[in-house]
Length: 432
Image (cartoon, rainbow, N blue to C red; front, side, top):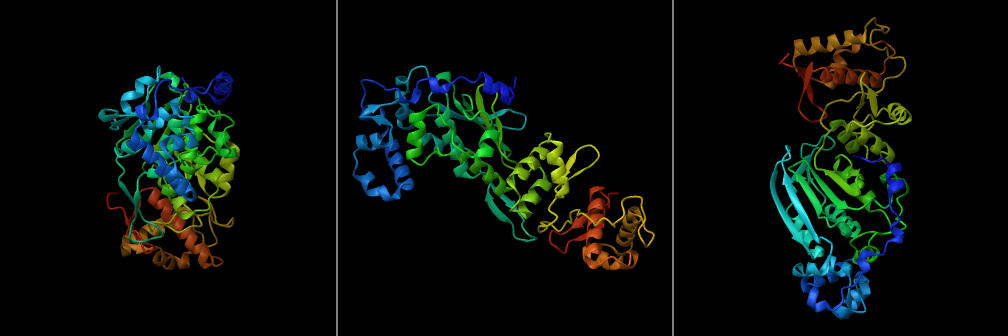
């Protein structure tokens, strides 16, 4: 059963009063006994990459000094944090009452498991191994009417690692659960770790973009920060959101119920209007993108927000729900004109303009043109209808009017688009 934000905050324990699990030490063992030498080398590379000015220092340090410097050991004594990141896989038994493993599960859309793998400590190696299992296919899109597609990976690998690093840093290891990644083939990834979301709500993070005042595994989180793996100063979640925006994909979804954090990362477009808005309007305000994303996922938004988006021409009410419109001020992506706002003098459905035509009459004129002449582009349609427009219509208003007529006819399935450029033509739908 899901808990709302108030319920979560009400029942969330005061973690500041709980000892730091990751700071606990393992007695009677040495670094050489329980830590993986290859993992230590990887940790050194992480440190040098995040602090290149300290390369010479890092290269001169012994393993014991290096591990003390980054906070994974305490005067040579091994901590739980050190075991999580760098521990030998066959030594996990030294950390009792915990599960130090991640699992990857591949499922189809019917949730049937197709494949799965288990990844044990050291997690600094396991992250790359798990990411290597994810099917990160090439994604193509067309921009600005270009005939040449732009290509990028479906998932930003740096973001995959960032989410996994957050799972590792914030996992409540006392719950004895796996960190889990479920891949729904060619669709989405779902990351899940145990433990309450410390900031309380996602809104707290997105609105303030500030760090938490407390970390469940403070020693582990600080060591990962020292290695450049996590950002304890805030901003990590914002980066995940911005990565999805750059891909024109749905924004991440956070489920904070049942003492767990579950992050869903989509790997494909689910609403063309949303994609086109992001593609054509790189400066769209973040708060608007959040609201548009909620609409494309069928979630409710407030009347105040919906009114703002309608005024901006980003959405319209279709009689049952809100529909996302493509950009009214950006470049078109596939030659399909999108509906634009007409000036107040333009008549609504059922009314007449100065030439005596209703909007329905204009649609019939367009249909007759295409029926008689065959496929036509937007410019040709504007020219052919020039005598049908009121005398006070300038060229801009004629273009907008025709663009809206074409958009309505396409939406009704009366006409189809031929071609993907700005010179795309329109033809009657032969199926009708």
